[in-house]
Length: 311
Image 1: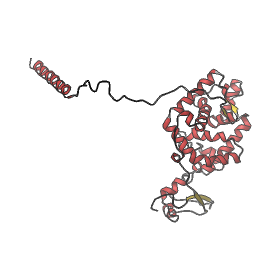
Image 2: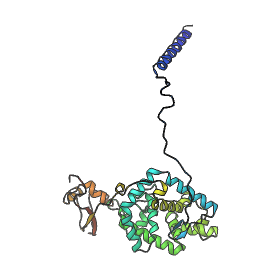
Image 3: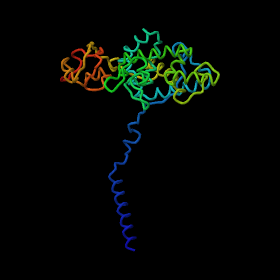
Image 4: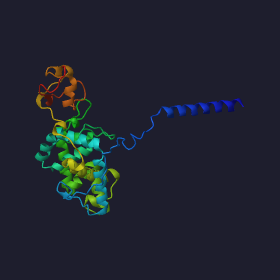
């Protein structure tokens, strides 16, 4: 009986509190009804019109095939409406494409391959679960096979210029083996042997005719989607000024052919600190340089006046 009394008391308190709260709320009057400020929603999601002439390195994407159409549509939608990532790609491209583009051109690799670096790493020095590193996501063995120094002290996979050269070598070799730039790009993800084996097993000779796993199956569509979006920002709803984009910091090169015992002290000699030195030379993996072989390294030093830091 006492329990029941307690419950009724609580219920009564809640009811009274509820009435009190309701009474304190301002009820609408004749003067305000119909004059409320409307909730404006200027964000809309639209289906995308499939662009004409989609291609990679001049090799057409066969969107007349319904399977290809749907897969291409997926990547255009995903990358258009992942707005924060898209804006970052525009910003970073302004900073890093000028480094990548002349190296591709020098090696005779189509300019479209810069978009491969975009989907591989987001134009950052990413590290994959498998151990691939840098903008081009190069594995340690591949780097060493192509002349990069890869160890705990120096890892040149983080050197954008050198890594781009290695990527070019790989892609040119893949093109020679597989016959098209599209297949060469796919091989960058799945390996030359992997793509060759699947072409033979399925008795086809084109990427778009292959049945592939999820990652490699989306690979070329993601590249083409990023190419399309990055070349047509306003068409896909990206709005920015040129001043919003990241800018490269001019640097000059310093040659070093000895050991460096302390990079913090080394940096101070050039009016910067260790953090800034590492930002421009991420391939220096430790705060010192062993260099027992007296190899010549090129260290990038930012020109004066770009960082407001104390060395």
